[in-house]
Image 1 (spheres, rainbow, N blue to C red):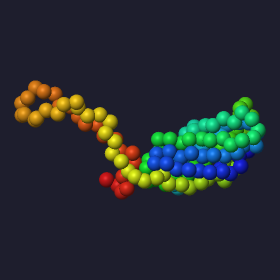
Image 2: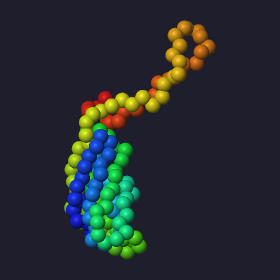
Image 3: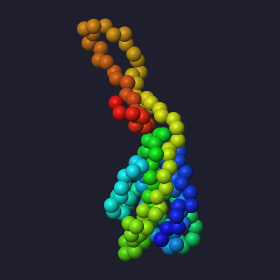
Image 4: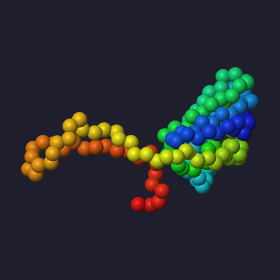
Length: 143
């Protein structure tokens, strides 16, 4: 079993969970948008990130990545042993809930740009090269 997470620390697009397990096994942690109701530990296990604990003492770390900046999440953790014979029930997994927000600030990342930018001339045969951008967060309000 897991002792409630010792620490949950957020960065801009990731969350690190540190916890202590009372026996060797796996620790799965996942971040869900605040308010989502979990109906099964499989929600955590299938979406979660895993850390393995090989001995009976020490702290285990799980890094949850690919999150949005400036966004509030509910983080849940779930444990099982290496043989999957002893697994944490949903009621216990729900008790590990920690609500945390990823850090500021929203960014637009430039993924690719043309090496040369040509002057636009109507009717020209020079192919246009696109700029490709990516947002690291969801919009603050519906678009």
